[in-house]
Length: 116
Image (cartoon, rainbow, N blue to C red; front, top):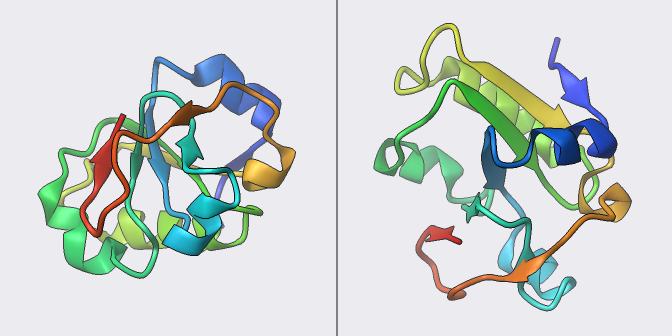
């Protein structure tokens, strides 16, 4: 079972966790290219092929548009050998649709991961 946290709990953890934004480029456009501060943007469609390009931390919060794709991404990350075995990997329930916190413009929108 995948652990989920509320957007309120997610906001409380910001700055202490690694944030992975897995929205596709079209979904990113829905927030005018804005992302959660400090997040890394890797669209879900590219996550399986780009997982080894990142240093995964001990606590990872995965966010998507509505909270469904992030559940799949959590399962994928937990199965990946590059993520520490004892890492906490959670999905943000409700995703960007429920998130009312600060958003910042992504530094760039390309087909490469974007860290802001």
